[in-house]
Image (cartoon, rainbow, N blue to C red; front, side, top):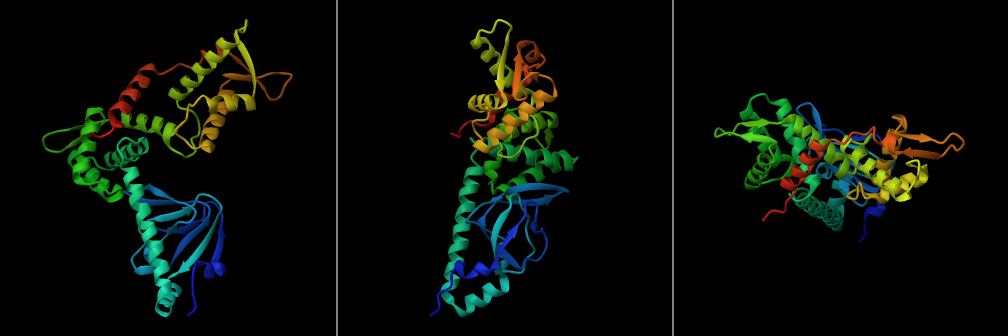
Amino acid sequence: MTVISLADFADDTVRVKKGTVLMRQDEIGQCAYFVVKGRLLIEREMNGENVVLGEVHRMDIVGEIAILDDAPRSATVTAIEDSILITLDKSRIKTLIRRAPHFAEVILKLLCYKLRKIHDRLMQDNDLSQPVCWLKICALLRLCAQNKSDPKLIYVSFIDNLRLFNGISFSRSKEILNRLEKASLLIIDEYQSLSVDLPQINKFIEYCTEEFSNAKYPSPTPLKLSEIAQYLFNRIRQSKSEDNTIALSKEELLKFLITANLWKSLRPSMQKQRAASAIQYMITNSIIELQEDLKDQFIISRANLLKIKGPKEEALEYVKLKTTLFSTPK
């Protein structure tokens, strides 16, 4: 008996560039992809806006439902890194399953592995003590509020989409609504109508995205910038500089910001990205200045740091929101 495995699909290996769309929502799928190397993004269009459902990484499979049925794709998948994939063509897979029943076991194991990962991810993503969970919930609430003018429809849309996209039960949805109301991000009346504080939700999403989301962020938020200024103030104080300045190379400043644990929840690569974007922002806004005789040496002064105005009220409100939303369920 001939043994067939994924190794037999070596000729079906493809290399795709970052930004390549591999499958589109509502199209009929003809294949699945097994990720050998790289990273893919899964998005679903909802009310005219793309909602991020997750990522696919090495040794994972995407589009597997297309192997089993002829239903339209449920989401759009895009390569967010240069990737190496194995194409699992539907017709070929079905032929192999008929001719080599043991190969069906390989496919079933792949699908079971994927289902377990989805279950584990849902459990983690729906952990109400995790900031990323609340980032998704608040982004979904904002989307529902922006697309529905009737407060009752906002309620229905939000609950339905929590269950659709996050797999959250009705009882769990009630807990989420209670916390959001306690945090003053929304008000629920006796008729199950939702009034949403969109400006406050936008600010919360902005701060949370920079602090907890492993995705590129263009420039520091006012709150994070004030934290950076405070760390640099302390560095100047510790240096006991008579002119209230310190000189740091770009590499030293980058390392200093990373080790300050300003973004400690993020992957190392994202911490570096945040620090680099903060440095660029401070250069552009003349908060730090290049030393005239040294190309890569920055002069950092207390006077320039004072240009950064810390949003004290927003900082207190953000701490309050995190405390209210991120608490561990009893």
